[in-house]
Length: 477
Image 1 (spheres, one colour):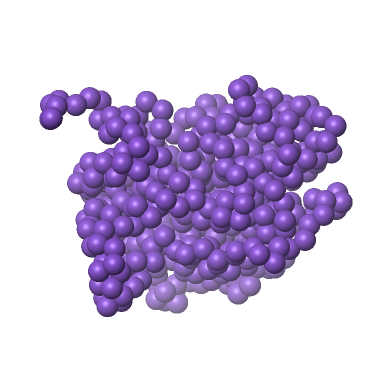
Image 2: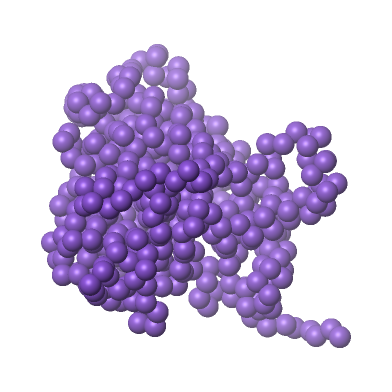
């Protein structure tokens, strides 16, 4: 019997699991996919928003500002890259200027610090490559960037290192109340918990419906992105947004914590909750807007395009409630969900405490986790010493991102353990460079097969039927 069963291993589910294990709870995380961070967390803008966009008085406003202030400390303890680069919301005319003034007033009311409107030479001085038609911008120096799936993997891994269980490929089909709590089942296996926490992303309304809560709906909103090579990463030094609309914060141009340049997203409501396709129309829209915001974008340096889904709730705000005693919704966590995630975890802990759950900090809780990229931070002397003891760190597998065999093996043996090539990619950045795995994929397949005790033909790119090697063409004795 678990104290808490968390449905969904995205960034909110992972941070809640970490927080609850810190307070002595026995936690089980259930995830329908074959890895953590496979939903909205895998594909979003990676921005820690300052908090000027959300309507004052909402959970979004309260938790965005608090979560943004907490994020740097969380990232530091979990060994996750965090870069406080600041953000600019650019305007092109007097109507945009009025919108920026509204956002400024809203941000001040929400408690965002150091907001101001820039224009003229001052604006061009801090961001020289802004589009020629940009006339003003709201400057938010407290905005930052992270890697969302890296944060999720680190938080889930830290929770597991402190005793949490993770069950993958577990698609929840029923939730039944019993005398002591709930029984959660996928039709084959059951998990029992005193408390169930619904962090199921675009499927959160379906999960809530299993306990009779039909008070909200979720609409998937697709956003398409383009990722440019690292040689383009210094084109801008801040995240550059357009003025927001009813559909979201608009298309952005932003560096990433790994040195690339990210463009997007579009915002289109769809019905299919598993539609991650990329369209010519979406990419064209990203290109057109990005080119107006920032000049000199080398669109011939695009190395990847992808799409993500946001969970747009029918209430217009985050849904954090307890419709049934012991069942907590963490739903409709669209933007600024990533920014708010540390504060959402704390909010859920406070909800449980108000319910009388005994929560005491563990003296033996291990709060620190070493960065997966620590090897790159070592001095030449330190690297040589490590290679002398473990030669696999001297064997470079991914040339584009300079990822060694030692780093891949470490990722394969560390919580939460990857089971496919994309899982290795999200943990080490192998295959994320200019050649997108053209050189290193065969070596990663070989390492995966050996670690998993399987044949190379069983290794997949992202689970399911995504096999990379179909069959052998020759047999050697």
